[in-house]
Image (cartoon, rainbow, N blue to C red; front, side, top):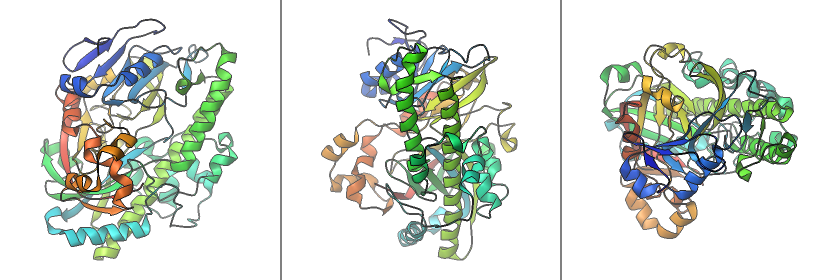
Length: 474
């Protein structure tokens, strides 16, 4: 892209121009840049750099691709000290529709090699009976006996306290499983009507995956995370479902209408925003926190059901401890470069380095695991942040990143090619015809994406996970 200039190894600067208030900085290898960087994603980074209160620079991750408002793989931080919040803005579109779409990784004491294809197929059947895949599915759990306001204010902790988990589970969840500031009164009645989807996967790129710890790069760190070569792992990827989608839609529309009254010139509709301190801004952050906590609760209840499915299958629960649970689409108040900031991460994962004060207690000295799933049928990674991750607001990529739209993938990949790309991976869930757009070739190469940051010291690789079986929803 002619607008980008080299700015160090695997770094590309988009200098400020026109209405941009700050530069943008894109992190990716030359190979990824030349093969997959979209003009539309750069345009969206440029637009976000024009927002009031934006800190320098706006960040693009190696999995960057065009989204709604802020590109997926985009990170922007807004000044949030008391004197700034009247002018700095918050944007619902820059967080995204799938609020707290995130990944939870569970470890087991099982040797992956001991599970054959028939075992894996049976396990998937047990999982699907307990956790329905697909868009619009309601929970098979039924009435869980927890007040809804408890769910959205206390998140995973409410589920654990009600018996759907272990007391130590929240210690391995971002925000300890419950983001502060949630207020149910800020959530519309329409959103509440869509809050019957706990313990469901959803569609798109959401999944449950059984994988093998195929490679360990750091023996000490991997052992600390209970990841051992050859062992089976379980990865859960889902978010706040229809509840979060409705919250984003409502507040994006509200912000779009209110922006003009605050004197904000919106660069595009998807970046509709209002001052952080405004009534609309405060209400959005309170409603967003409800969706964040709903997603943590969703992954917690799914964890409970995963443990139950394994017990159904083999008569015991084979460990299944929570390694960590990370959020992707979220806005959080954090300290960066000595000042308070509101960091929007859209399709990006927080990765705190060793000794960072906001690390969870159990990982305070080494940094928490950052879980980066690949595409369906390709490897995933467990990473940690480093001191250098500070330059990206302690953010890294959240996955591989699409190179084909869903429509393009459905047109160019047939069922036979889809099955060929999956190889030996056992598939379960909805009909394969409905998830062809999730084929590996629709995504960037996960190794190239991960190495773009690992090669320059922004991340440190801990382990590589090989997929063995996966459940997807359409």
